[in-house]
Length: 234
Ligand code: FPP
Image 1 (cartoon, rainbow, N blue to C red):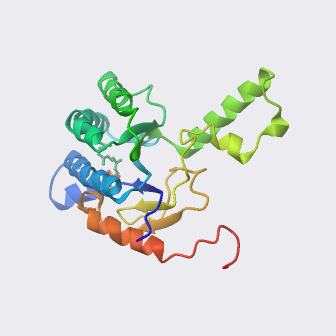
Image 2 (tube, rainbow, N blue to C red):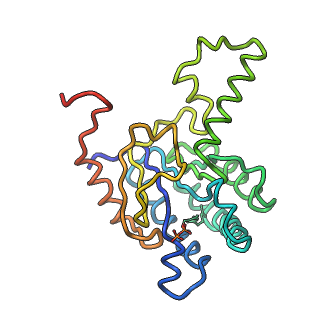
């Protein structure tokens, strides 16, 4: 099996998973956190270079306050529970998104996770929190405009590569495979720049039910694709 270098996942369906069981939505996110544990381990074991997960979007603030604070509490718990094992598995955590508006405890926890895993050389595990693809592109444009305004950059020299270096994913390969659980056929402002040539795999399985076996099915589907990047078949 040819393993994609970068897998990105939209972990959708937690709420529906909980509803089907007569439980509150947060129980679904909690089960989702457990599913995430197994997927991170599987990616690390398979030799995936980069795993990116969409934990909280810039639009998710619209949810009831109780659910929002519940997700951030889970994040704190995730770090407390998983940091040791992530280090044992040589996993390096990076963050995508603007974490400034996060509650203190959540911001501290994720920064600790980044700091504590910074020297690891295995799987790069990107957690997208308060992330939006358009916001990321605007941020990159602002950074370049600032450099131009200060006379350090000639706008003529802006290339796609230079632009990509301003994104949260600087130095990382674009996602080869984007997996969306929960059945919706959209990207929801996830990796808007980076997804230009990604293969997309959608499964009806809700995120808490997404197992390493299902990840293998997604990778098998990816392997059957004919990636031409705008060219024609060799
Ligand atoms: C989408 O499902 C899921 C989220 C907005 C949150 C994802 C969070 C986790 C998996 C747990 C915590 C994360 C970490 C990194 C510890 P949904 O609520 O939109 O589901 P629905 O479409 O069925 O309502």
